[in-house]
Each structure stands twice: as structure tokens, then as C-alpha cells.
Length: 126
Image (cartoon, rainbow, N blue to C red; front, side):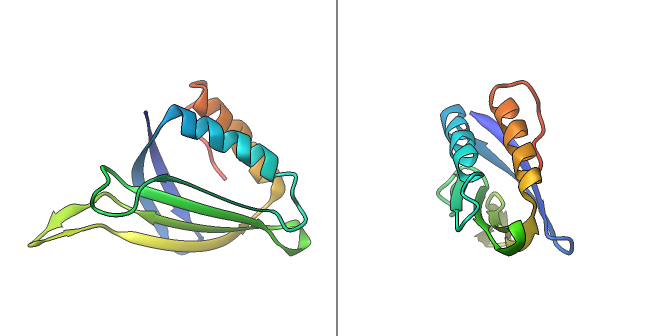
């Protein structure tokens, strides 16, 4: 297992959480992202790490990438923190953010995520 520290921002909101992901799932995501990057005409890819809900051990992250007009990549991120006892309730913070990115940044993210998956770096950014 790998613990990922994720930070997501749309320029206005900022959300941080920790997620656990298996090495095989991370490597599979890298391969699938590498395929997605060439689907510029209507391509869509979704991936996620962790699980939403109090029954899971840590936070969650779901990402949807879709090629839009003018070569932009439309990004939707849903994230949830680890559940904690707050008063009498077991609660987690959640966020859904939307922003656009560039194909060149996706290429860099894939290279970085591959290195992270292989244990050769500790940072990947889109």
C-alpha cells in the first residue's frame, strides 16, 4: 500500500486528504491514463482511490477527466477526508471541484505518477 497525500484546488477552494492505494491499482491507473491521453476526440476517463463512507479506513478521491473543446481537459474531482468523531457524530469533510487543465500537464502528470508508482519520486501534480 501507498499513502497518498492529495491536494486539490480549483483556484478558489483547497482540499487536502490522505488516501491509501495498492501498488497494483496505482500502476493500472498509470497505464489507463496513458491510453486516455490519446483520446482527444471525446475521450473520458474516471479513476478513484480509497472509498467514500465511514466503513473505509481513510479518505477517498474520484477524478473524472474529459477532453473538451479547444484541447482543454475538463477535470472534476470529488474527495472526502477520513471520518472523525465530532461531538456525537462520525463525520467527514467532502468537496467537489471543477477546473480545466492542459494536455501537456496531463503528460507530465502521467510521467510523475509512473515514477511515484515505481518508487522513484514522491510527488505528482496535474
